Image (cartoon, rainbow over the protein chains, first blue to last red):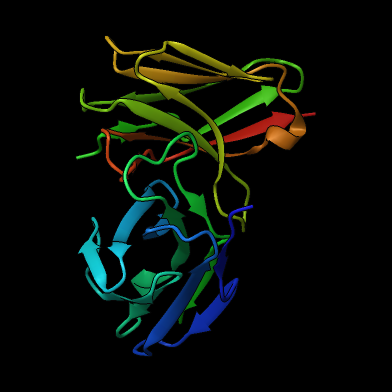
Length: 115
Length: 111
């Protein structure tokens, strides 16, 4: 089974803190993605990476950065957390090119609350 | 610009009846579609897919229908069960590794 593991299920951080969300996949997938899920807005792409050290902005990259130093690990960084970044964050991975029948494999999500 | 739309944010259905979840898209280049199911505090999981060369794909109680001329797909669940209560997302791609997701429909199956 492909596994995408997000390091924290729940996080509470203070406004202005630097926050790191970690994601690890164990199936040698080239692509990795960070989404946030908000009610009524669905899944919105923050950043994605198709190779080590490669990254591309998604639809809502403002206030975020990412790091991919190893193929299996993709980190999302909130440079200075704000209350509007309170959300469910989902990491996903997939093979390069067409993803076949299954699309992405998602992690279980990190519920981040910024107070 | 929302390329993939799920216009019903929520749906309630009696156990045993049919659930129909709808999804519309605007990009005629989309050629592969998926449905994901998401329980609270969990990541979305793959449910069923369909290629644009087909108009129907069936997997047990789940059937996805694609109407390319209307740019519309639907997910039918028959019979609906309480365990089907979740948020359902449709997603589409145009031949790349990047999927566009809809906003989701929360299905509640009433026992």
